[in-house]
Image 1 (cartoon, rainbow, N blue to C red):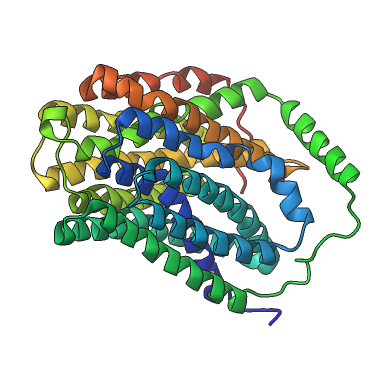
Image 2 (image 1 turned 30 degrees about the vertical axis):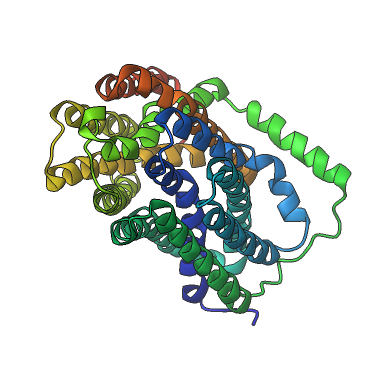
Length: 419
């Protein structure tokens, strides 16, 4: 029981890590749009769901101190399943908006905690020489979770909407399916996860030493060279995308009289959830190859920043042309998502290089907190901007918001890429 083949647990563990994230960030937006919530309310309140990932660095030391990583994985998967069930049961009620949001927030908190435990367990449960190889495997199954969530499950909701004529019922079934998946994940991982000797509760650590190390970690982070430019980069690199991602699904679903493309739920699952996600995966893979094999981050940061900016033009085109052809819409969404996947590679690579040092793991967690903050704050006001300006002007605004990072990049201190 101390060792298991990594193929038995890494794919399922990272599938379970990706699924609640896509439920919180994407499925919630689509569901609330279908249930009649306004764009402004959707963008504001679902953006608040980023908060657990923003503040994740503040409680990650306690996950390391209390119990084992293995225990945290079990506990969080069971609580995530309970949160999914809570959402499923509250959707048909008259107070679904407030109640389901509360369950989504708990789901986000449990998902962020699961991320901490799963990533820590990955390093403990695998020999060092195998960790590099399985990074690609874990990322692939994380993306498969995205295809499952915003592709297959959204298409299932669309099918049930048409078959039953009851939108709340359709989405309740989807979240009951998610509940079943996480009950199964809990049972599987309780049986299959290895028992590495290093994964044990730490006994030689006191609250005082944790606090001192915690403070020292943050002080060391903010003393890094080039910290101001680095923070500006973290907050502005996805300034446009942070707003686009909140309104992409509502735009595709809204009727033509509201300036949208009037896709059905199932068509959205095809265009955005399947074609878009597969294009995102392909862009990310090619971006990783480009940085690793063709010159490193210093060479690719400008092209990748442009690849995040230029494909957003397709949404401006769609807002004016309002194409009816699902193939054209899917191609446009796929092009934008490919550019996002390719460009996002530079962002994650920079965070890894900037985090390098004595507190690499903790500093990377802090960087991801700023990354989530850069998504949360602009996303909160994006719905209000769209309702005030309309879709064409909103997508023009997204393009303008993508420009500030080009003023920041010349001031970045990029360390030499790892060999």
